[in-house]
Image (tube, rainbow over all chains, first blue to last red; front, side, top):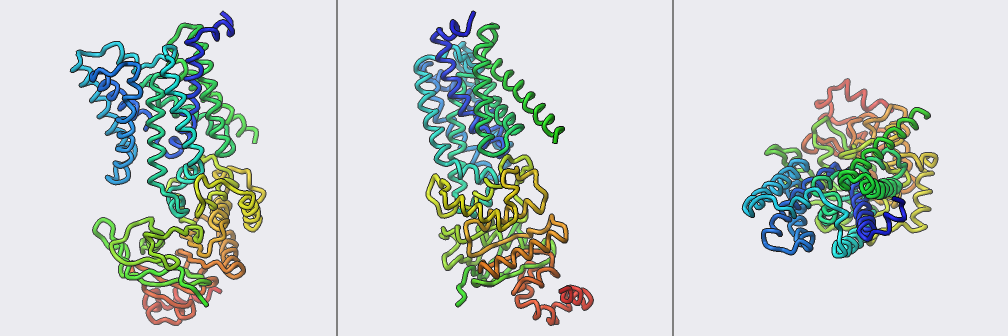
Length: 275
Length: 250
């Protein structure tokens, strides 16, 4: 089957568009999160998304709108992580752990109340990008625009707090506001990425492209651009490859990301060897 | 006529139920070059952080450029160089040019984009600090001395009136340290930047600072270096021999 023929399928076109939008968002935010040692926030929020999806399904929300229904709770949880870190002086990883376990525990209890795992909940755990519908694509496009505009608007502030929060404060930057913007954008992105790679693999999409970019980039801006490139390439290869080889798309995208990371890592060491 | 840039009155800082700083009061006027010295754990760095609002205080009043710290917004008037970056990551992927550009955020409206004038200011500062050749290098690849120059460039690129430096020479070898002090003296003398320098390097600071504050949880001495050398209190504190070594180094 040729590339042209594969591209003629509507579900492949939708998967490529939605996948690229999600990949770009995750890779941009991932750079800030990885450098701020908040990599696992994606994992934590993904677990909360699991709980939120279970809650939505139990409340009888139309499965087509479960993504939107999960947004408020996931955003609230992201703020919870931030407040636990800032006010209760709990380490970031512990705060993520608390919210994460609460989310997954809530989801399991709710699923049990509803009579066990039903097919819908299972599909959110592992994602199915090839099942992305028109509504999902529109939601993805809107969230993509909102998050990317916010990143562009706060780019220099985000860069400053990522480099050093104290220095940023002494530059008059409202670090609490910028941290809030960052975690809220992450929450939105995690909900959006759920359909693409599934709840279990979201953090991979946030972490791997950014870490690969850190191996090869020579400036902060180029790190973000490289991260976007790695993520987009992995989604493209992942969708085509999984379709041709009849493999799960979400998992395949993550595997491609890992291979790209290995290549970037090897390139870094070869370059070091030359210097 | 000198203008008051920083005024601290009756500052107390407590941490875990212990006093870190007690009844600290002093003021810094424009043109001053103040050296704050004291032993390890004396609260020097905490004093600077409290003055900038980076740590909270139990009581006391702090004003910056005449405005209470809580409502102070003119951060472009202050350049700050910390002892070390809180979570410095040697693999942080920012170039020297990008880091120096971070010194131009204060007082700007979002999205705080750099203007052509800003790029000129960055260029000029890189030149003054002698780091133009390093502009495209990643900060983590530089030596300790070069990194300090970059961070100093970040602190001065916006043309601050007050420069606050917290033990900036800790990681430097003696020769680089001397060059760094000379650079600060030139910024104070030639560009009129008021300098507050926290250091444990008591003997070096006497050569450069016009005023000398010795802190050990509270202010033990505040005066000129000459006064310090002739102070009986300081003789009792350091012992005659140590005081002689400190005072006759220059």
